[in-house]
Length: 243
Image 1 (tube, rainbow, N blue to C red):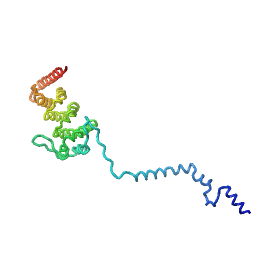
Image 2: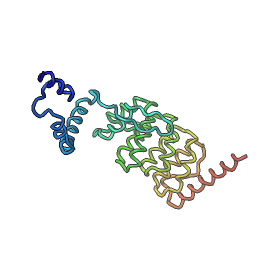
Image 3: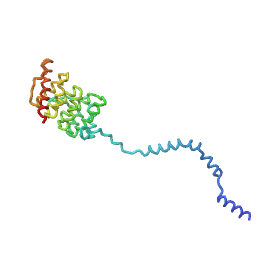
Image 4: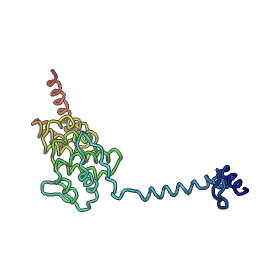
């Protein structure tokens, strides 16, 4: 009778088997109290970080391409070659005065597909004040590619580039003979650098067929007078083109 009563009493308390020491609700509350949880939190964070580290992708991330310039696609292979051009220590010029190097030749071999990357890398380097040597080597590569898709970019270089870059851009205009370069070339008729002035005048003569006597052998006053004639001629062309 006593045994039945004892079992009933245990059943009333919801206890069906004996607990091990320290497994009572009170002990559990003590073990998992606020202070203990806060002590274990850093350990849980470290474990989670370790798991995340082990789950990194096996393949390396694809390098980001630069933003297109003048709606020209940027070929990743050409972009990498553009930056490698500056690493070439051995450079030479052929009998046509074209610049060559290992990576530059590989870049030029891509042809018109490389124009977008050349423009994008030049822009990025120019905006960040990067190495000038890289910029003029890219323009030398562009000269050899000779793509009409580069005309808008070429005009930008004529307006914003440094004088050495403007001279290479003027040679591009001279060899390509595209009339879309005329405005940017005339815009350099106020340039104080005689080399830029004469390079642009030579390109204008080739494109337009006009000649106003601007030559390097002239004195400064005669050069400025001839440059002014180019500006007046261009203004007359604009006026005549208006309806």
